[in-house]
Length: 274
View 1 (tube, rainbow, N blue to C red):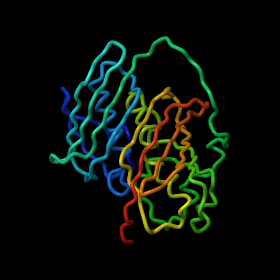
View 2: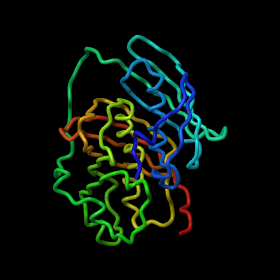
View 3: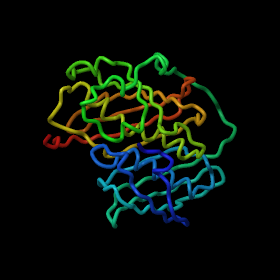
């Protein structure tokens, strides 16, 4: 089982870091959201303003479960905001290029519009561990999350086409919350990346023809709830055409606050043989 804080730990300083990708975060290789969370944490190590505002990343290649080099450069450092560039490479091969923006807390116009999806509390739902057949193969990644599906019937019947929407509760394990604001924001970033495919593939079940890795991931961090263990993920894929699948996602706190929003562009490729 992976620990998000331990598995994004960095060694180094002065804008040059080294980390090791943990196999506990495997989905088709090292999970892209995990790699993005690592890059976000590296930006936090160089940031003078400890409040992440946005992340924009391009995935360039799939890495291996081995050491990576992470470089962070300051593009602009202002009094109220910073722009940082993060590059993740493995033996000189680029894996991820990202831009991270920080923003200081301050006075401004405020409002909240719209509500979180109305769903049962996570404690009233069965976990994915309880619902799935123990004989089903599962990627190591899913052991790192306590997942509470809203539609348990999908674990009891052959895959059926459904609307391209994915709404579920998640809690990280073995630890669920993090004091570091960049690791805390990484909780949302990782989910925004990862849950794009579960939403996008829903209308095409059963599907053995394609998978769709993310070309990119983008996230805007609106609020923080580091004291709350449960996060509600609300994803959809409104359009898939020409090999591209566009997704949007929102991450809500237990008390109904919108913590982050974003999305990804997925690119269909032939599924590997089983």
